[in-house]
Every structure is written in structure tokens, then in C-alpha cells.
Length: 430
Ligand SMILES: *Cc1c(COP(=O)(O)O)cnc(C)c1O
Picture 1 (cartoon, protein in one colour):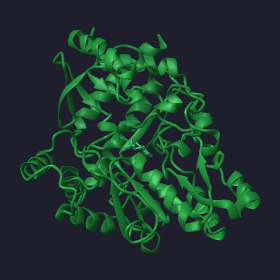
Picture 2 (cartoon, rainbow, N blue to C red):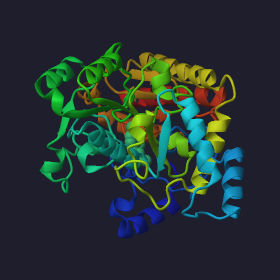
Picture 3 (tube, rainbow, N blue to C red):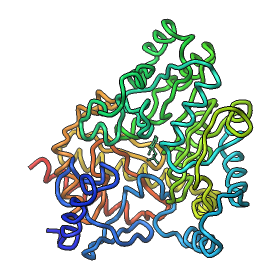
């Protein structure tokens, strides 16, 4: 049994002063049960909790830490930035450098605005799309998560799905009245909606690879179809690349799939583990943002020097040739090993993997959208999660999340994970 004495004490205190004991719902382990370990340290791919237990980490700050924990280059960059002052509320060189790097890496981004979270990025991109088109309706896909802005909480993935919430009290129906939610990976419903109300649709927002119902890659033609339909009807296509940006390729999913969205939302990796989001796109669209245009959007700590330093250090690390191939190879090996281990235990699972993101679904599959993801046996996942945790492997505490492989993961880490999973699969069947 894991000794979680200190974590348990912290958990009791946390529940007194933080709603549900946490500052973000999925961290509470509700879907898998037990006390969440309180983390005191991360180094490379390893986490240490308050009781001194060590875990091989596949959460990686929900994808932000592609370079692993406390990478020396990132730590150095943040420390030296901090020594020069943590915030000025004035322009700084680092934000220009990071913006230049983002614009040079992401194919469709000519100008970018930094914000403090992925939520702010999608919220602002939607505002901009509505202003640019003079239309109000937004099309999203069920199970896609775009942060917690009111208009985007309808049929959201991630914690909303994990906790089985239909929507969210506190969001007035008028605010979601303009949000149309359709199944992921199907073009016909999108065609139909455009035929009916195409002239009212400001934008289609999509995770080009869904990561918040677990990992679900786009079916061939899905993203191409969205590009075509939006262009035909004068609506914008927004790629929410908060997870996929800088993960699936230097230029994100849009580079990997060769599709140019009008606007792109970034987060997670772009901040290198500090709070950063960004939205960007064509210059004619971005020039509508204040102060060059009338669409207001601001932030006291936006472009924060520590956050810019962490993002810059991380993106610079990623420029080394061969890194994405290495991540792909490790992740493919993990996916194949997990499939073989489950087959050996006669446990029907589906592993969806693309690049360094993957999910083990406890269903024979295939998993192509929210409905098929929800066929997973979440009780079996919870048992699996618990056994893996006991074996020193930290998986996201929900069936409906992505596992992330980082540059700090080694081949030995992957083999150890496959071995532990084999034992856990057998125990799940027992
Ligand atoms: C995490 C996430 C967000 C929200 O980002 P926050 O920084 O948590 O606000 C938005 N979109 C996607 C696809 C995400 O995975």
C-alpha cells in the first residue's frame, strides 16, 4: 500500500479551505477514488509526493511540460528573469522574442496576443471571430474542451465529462443559445447546420486532435471538410491547439495535417509550465484586436516576463532536430506494448495514440467521438489507475484525459510502464 500520511493530512486541510480540496476539478481524484498525492517536487519524468513516494509522471502538468519537470534550461531562464523583476506592466523584449518564435513556427499565425490561460485564449478568439464576421453563432463539438468560458461549456470534455455534468449552473441559457454542439468526426451534421443557419455562424472551433475525451484523432477528411465548409460560408475556422500546439509537430496539428485555420489558440507548452495562453492568426484578423482595432482584450499580467522566459526556453529546446521523432517512437512503443499486454490478459481495450499523446480506453472500441469514449468501463479504469499508482506510475486520474510522454521519458521508463500495466490489466480481469 502507498503510504500517504502527509498527503492525507494535507487533503483534510485542503477540503476545509478549497472547494473540493483543489483549484481545478480533475485533480481531486473523484473519478478514481482515494487521496490525491500532494506533490512537492518534480524532476525530469519523476514526481515526488509529500510522503517521499516517487511516480513516473504521464500527466506532465496536463501536457504543458513536454521537456519534463524542472528542465535546467527552463529553471535558469525563469530564475534569471525573476532576478530582474517579475512584472512591469510595460512591454518587454522577451514577449517580442516569444511572439517572433510562435509566428515563425505555427504556419497560420502572423500575429499573436499572449494571455494567461487557454481559457482566455479561446474566449478571446471567439470574441474576435464574432467581431470579424458580425455573426454570433459558434459551432463546437461535443467532448471538445475549450476552457471554462461560458459560451464554450456546452457538452464540454475534460472534467465536465469526467464528473458527468450536463452543463454548468451559472451559465445563462442566453449565453449558450448561440453555441451549436455537434458530434466530433462527422461532417454531415456540420453540412446540415451550415445549410440551415450558415449566414449566422461566426466560427467553428475544434480541437484538431481531440484530447479531452481521451485522445481521439480526426478521421481522414474531417478537418479538411471543416476548412472547406467554413470558407464557403464566410465563417472562421478556429483550431484549439492548447494541447496539440508544439506537441504534434513544431507547428502543431495544423502543420501535421497541413490545414490552415483562421485563428489558433495556444496554451500549455507555450508557457513551459507557467501560466500562458495565446491566440493568433491572420494579420487582417488580429489587427482588429485593441489597440490596433476595436475588439477589446487586455491583461495585467499578460506577457509576464517569467512566463515568457519559460515559454521561450521550452520552445528553443524543441528546435533540436530529431526530438519529435523520438517522442513519436517512444509513444508508439508504449501504445503497442499496452495493446499487447492487454491482449495477453484478454482485456478488450482501445489505445488511441498520435505523437506523444495517448489514451487507453477500457472498451473494445473503436473510439472516434464522445459517445464511443463513454462506452469505456470507467470502474475498470479506476481500478487500473489505482494499481498503476501503487506501482509508482502517475496517470491522469480520469478515463477521459490524455497521457503525455515528455522528452524526459526514457525507453526504460516506457518498458517499466508496459510491465506494470500488464500486471494491472491482469488484476483488472481478476
Ligand atoms: C487545457 C485546455 C484548455 C484550457 O486551458 P487552461 O489553461 O486550462 O484555461 C483549452 N483547450 C484545450 C484543448 C485544453 O486542453
